[in-house]
Image (tube, rainbow, N blue to C red):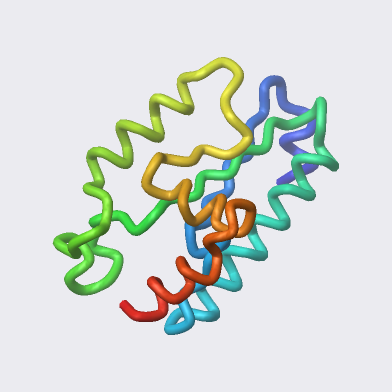
Length: 127
């Protein structure tokens, strides 16, 4: 597929990761690790495909959907409509950000950089 995208005009590849790519949920270690791997893969593709394919990462926070039982009403999760609205506003920017990050996911995305990683990990682990 990447070879096909290289030949297309204005090709864009969007990979969906998660806030858990940056601060894992121990109860969902495999999911978190997979999302972290996709983040790394996306960063690599962005470098490899520079000037050929636009590579964007969409990293949602916990969003109120039907993905798991009770998730659509889970307190602390972002309402789906709000997530879509905020994400689409970023996709409408020119240029589109390399990472589409709604405000709710930024604390996880920047946890290591701002020194709050251990605190965020403990918070997620206690859920």
